[in-house]
Length: 607
Ligand code: M6R
Image 1 (cartoon, protein in one colour):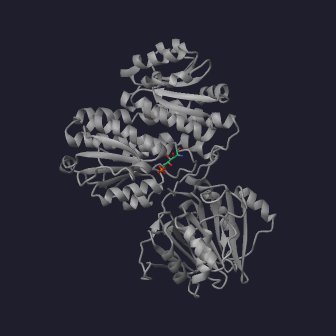
Image 2: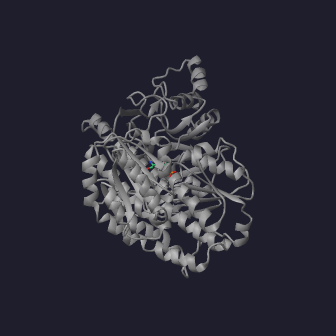
Image 3: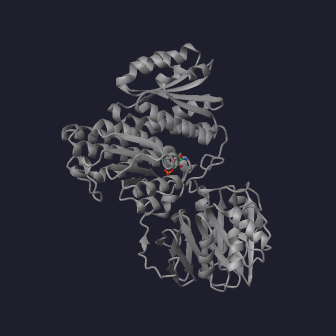
């Protein structure tokens, strides 16, 4: 949610900021801007729209200077406009600020500042930071920023430069990601690693309320009491290529194609002697006996993966599990004690609601296990245990490999707990693990059928509504398929438990309404077939998904996507891939911006 890049060094700052922002554009893309400090003046160029619009503003004349801050915005306070774009300047234009997050008490701060004569140019909450900094400025930028932060409530990652301190850049974070890149005679700040990976692999991962002071050859860290902080350098091991499109038209397409490989990365290293072993997580049979119930807490696609997790853990390990949307969990006062396990699921590891739920659960005494993709993210750092999904950088806003590797994590947790609790025999666990290991090659088969999915999209991309139905695990995958379709193609879509359709929603089915029916559960196949017939009887057009061998569906449905045979409990991870592809090609056929859908951002770091 919003991207920040800052540079201080000997090179021209503008191209470094623009390149970095391009890598962060997935975080927000309704406006962009940079501030460059040079010859005693801060030059701000910003605009509503994409980075391409910003570059258009330069008209070939890129601002010169060796220190600067840049921003891509996802609007919270104030519509996307030139004025509301970042960086924001203080009244006398001495100070420029970029900010991610929300300043919750900005209204009262704004009133106070206005009484003192400060004039506001934007509707943003961020602008108060620039004016406060000017008000507190005493020549020392760290002291100034500390005073500002003491006044504000909310979440923030902030970068600040000042025309009277031409060789310094300061920054701080709370509940919003910020990292520091350490270079040779140059240093960086950024919201995420890809922004600066071209320049350095040496990173400081900032914790909440850690202040950083950068010059071109030195980086110092301080607490809010100005005590120095010693921090380990985090070495980034993945490659810059992993965050590039690599010849694909879109990140989303590349990430869908990566699924066989990354799923393999997620599971294979965790299999020892045919069973699941987590090297870094010490979960004993006694620990498990002490757990009376579990919660899985997440948002969006991660929440859908959590629903599958509930089903699997309850079935294989017989531990009661509740699944909660993180933004609800926090405010519903759930019953949590030291016998509760809370499993937090998040691709980015930075989702504000999910992070807050984690903190709440820990405060109440729960043991917290995080399932996270981004190494070193806030959720990974704050959880008691972390199970990394190792999907590599996921850039497209719509989660694909992030979600399927979360599913893999759910399988592994359920299998591990099943054996530990004695509810799943080692023999049955080994059978399921062997089946799991066939998933990558079966996904390759499905990805090979891309042309038939393209055809389906061609036929149906212009429909107004698409419903998704399924029973059991199929229902959970239906929810994910429906989310994919609506977020990138803007086609109205809902997902229902197939048996629930006749309790109301079937009233919406009329001649030609498209219903994607998941019938991949052999044990529920006949039941789902009946629901498909109910839809057909009302004139609906049915695209069905079923496992090889369940040929009777071909006689009823209009279109059938056949999945390779697999244990019912594992079909979700196969079924979701054609649904991702269908959503992708519908969006392409409608001319949508697949990687950057309207109104969305990759990492939702505001509540
Ligand atoms: O990074 P997280 O897994 O915590 O993100 C959660 C959701 O914001 C995310 O899954 C969102 O729903 C995606 N856009 C879905 O494609």
